[in-house]
Every structure is written in structure tokens, then in C-alpha cells.
Length: 406
Image 1: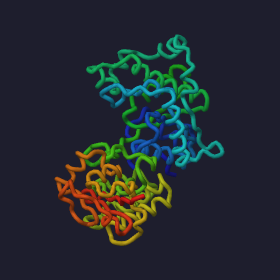
Image 2: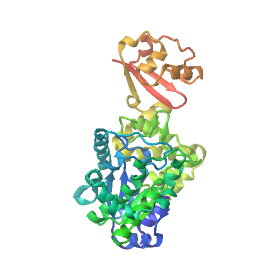
Image 3: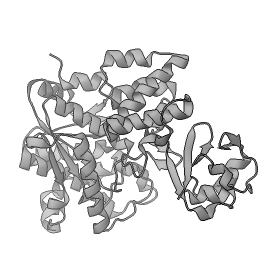
Image 4: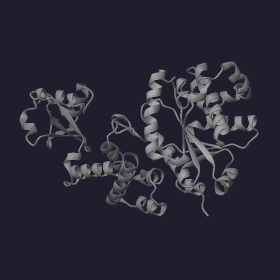
């Protein structure tokens, strides 16, 4: 019988293992407790975290128990992995606010009912540690020479690595040890950029407890060119609908490159792999149907079926001439803005962040208002522009907004 290991391999999740054959046998024969950590550096998770949550969901569906660990303690230090500069220091209040927001997002995605999953915050054990006792108990098992060869530190050594950040690996390793002691947690999962930190935890448990412990990493979400996915003109693709609207979220997946469709269907949906391969093999105009399915399924997972349907309807209204225009992203402006230039209106509606950017868009021929291309940045917006109750703005080929006067 196929195990979750086979599912994760087939869908392209797995990248590195600590003990591959032992892990394969363990997942086939036992139901284990595992964990994934999420540092609360913002008040929302983004699409980069989504792949880890999908991995967690596959494990849970196979009967394994997840621990979602929110890093309220480790966020006080900041993970140097993948960073060329030191992270911005967050206040305790900022971290607590971020933890609260992230917990709500996780609860929509992972089933925490009846002990099926555990939600923990490492602030509960890290913030009250006695430093001398911690260094004596934990630090003695870490070789500085070995730590300095870790990928997470290498790129920082030339520019400077603070001792504060150097502690991060010890703290993450200690998290695994603590979860092992509390819940019998035997495996850590995470993004491939966490490999060095994950190895530290596995090694620490094996040294301190003389017990087996394991780690597996998942591939980072990259496109066919090897670049990280999830970046938009407005920044990260957030899972919070207030930061990235369900429509914008839907449109991101609707517009990905043809070469990335099969990979995204495999990693970010639960569609059976036979169907994933069929959809991924479509060519030319037909691949657009696969993109619509991808966009709908991913949006449904994050925002629910109702919001996914609204986003789909809005896209059809704009691009196919049908559907419900009421679901198109809408910005409000005060009536006093009428009589101002189009540049002022775009900035007031927060469709563009600055007047300079608005002027550049117009100069490059990228702005259309009510299906008319705008060539004059000083054009005055009159009441006539809102004769149907709203003004339709298109930036480039695919970014639409309605502006209404309130």
C-alpha cells in the first residue's frame, strides 16, 4: 500500500532527507508526530509558506499528527537563512500580534479538532530560559567549526554575522528537542533553506536523548527559470485577503507561465496526479483551462469556495465579456477628487503608490480608462467618467480595478 512518502515523492515535494530509508519505512509502518516551524515576521503567511502547509496537510491526511510551531521566541532573534543582511528587529508586541494573525490562518487550513494537530508557540519555553544553563546543556553539543560551514551562515560571514543570529540554530535545534520531550515528535519538515537548522535539531535529539530523529525538506516554490514564485508588483503574494485580495490571488495563478502549470497543480492542489499530468500536458490555448482550474483550486484552499467563485466570476467578466462585474476589485475615492487629474485619482484610490509611477505608466502606454487608452497624465477626471456608477481602470494587459465615488 502506498504511504504518504510515495505521495510526497510523486507530487514533487521532497528535496533532502537525513535518513531516507529509515524515513520511508517509518512513514509506511507507523503514525508519527512531526512539526513545521513558522516564524511570525509579518502578520500574515505568504505563498512561500503555502507549500509547507500543503506538505503538512498531506501528512495529516495520511494519519500523521502535525505540530504547527509558531516562532514567537525565535522571531526575537531572526533567522539568518537566505538573508544577506540582518533582519529588522521586531518588538515583543509586534511578534505577539503576528502570532495571533498567523494562528487564525493555520486553523483554516489544518484540522486541529480532537487533538488531530497541535498548535504551539516556542516563546512558551524559549523566553524564560536561563542563558548559562542553556549554553551548558545545549551549546556544548554544537561545534562552532561545523556551524560556520552551514549554508545558512556562509553568505553572511563576509558582510558580518551577529552573535545574536548565531544563536538561532541552537534555538531551532532546542525547539525540536522540546517537542520531542513534550509530544514524542520525531520529525521536522520545512523548506530546503532550513536544512542546516534542521540537521542541528536531529543531531541534538540523537545526542541528548539517544533516540532516532529525522528531517525532510521540501523544495522551495520556484518557477521554470529557478526564480522564487509569489512576488507581485505590490510585493509578496499574501494569504491574508486584506493584503492580497482573493481576486489578485486568483489572477496570479491564472497568469503563471505555461511551463509552471503542472508543478503548481501538483504542489498546491489535491487534484489526483493522473489529472495533474493531463492538465499539465495541454498546449497553446488549451493550457488556459488548466490555469483556470489551478487558480480556482488554490484560491478555494486559501480563501474558501465562495471567494474563489467570486474571483472566477470577476475574471470572466473582465476577460470573457461575461460574469459579474461586482466582484472586480473596487477602490473608493471621495467625491471631492472629481476635477482632479487622472494621476491624482489613481494615487487617491491607492491603485498606484506614487504620482511618478502613475505618470510612467501613462507614458509607456499602459493605462486604459473605460476602454480608452490614456496618453495625457494631466487629463481631468470629470463626472462623465462615472456615468455607470464606476470607472474601470486597466493597467497593462491584465490588472483591472473599478473606482467608485463615495
